[in-house]
Image (cartoon, rainbow, N blue to C red; front, side, top):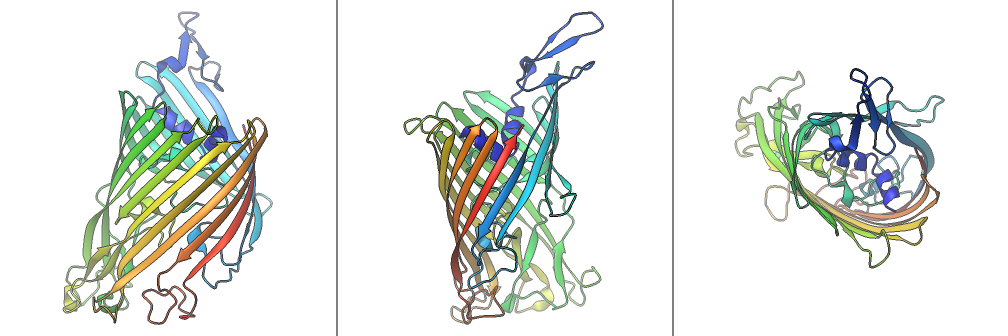
Length: 457
């Protein structure tokens, strides 16, 4: 159901709708020259006595239960956490409670609606007092401008499927960043969004190349260098009676420096030990209503590609690795280290949601992701100098939700994930995350199951 879908996306619907708010949302009726009385005509909002603020408190409380097969590490919660021939030391059955609370304050002004929104979240950590509160959103909106932390402009939340909190589906992504965003509607369903976003999201890092491209000397390591620009992100969105679609793009500058144990440029290699390279990412997402199969039914599709900007497709084995760092010239080590290549990813994700009745719905979907990090080991067979780390992940899932009364939902969710390291764990393999057992199996599949019980307010 669409209401359930909006719930599982957190505050996505609230944030996405915010930039379209205008003075008509809140009508002002002046009863006395010096004591105006404001009437809040926005559903769910109340007026704060003695002020011109329309205010709303919302959120939810939830319990999640999960169970995994032994190869799937619950600490990861995504299909790339499956370890071939592995045995996780974490409990394969567990449960946790969590909740969110948000505050929304709006005022009608001559510039349009001025808004402040804050959302906090806390997970239970199995102690008497539970987990600490974490900031999900904190932003101000003034006319067409948004200032603060909220969903990245890169995202298309409408193409994210319904699924349980215990897992992140392959090919999906949720980025909340500090940003300055401008939103402009052009009519006929077209909207343009342009933003400057904090470049340090998820602290992107450089992988060290191995083989003939190894980073010199052995005691040195690579760190983020001073950054001189934010990420530039833009998206164009089209909405119609059939649904909506969005095309997004992002540019990220990678700045890295090779240092020694003291944090200084290492001697005796005074060469090019700082380097930078631009990375980029693109996304296409769509949400399509399918009334021919049932009222409220819909189809979603999302595709992403990144090159040197892995944080925009972050749920993968390498996390936010952007470039590969190694010798600029392995024949002349005195030239020092630099970025020798970039990490690329691509993914696709599709889902279909069907409403069986006003209280029962199902979502079925599948996602696929490829991660490629070039130049990470000597290749003795192709004599190319070094070869790739490449990992393929795919996932199938299906769930059933039951909403017996308004704002109370039970979700039952089953996932099958599969990983393939394309040669990892084999003799003279390209990349070996299972170094303790080089003959281990390099691909594996596993099941995970979750139940969410959620009450919103």
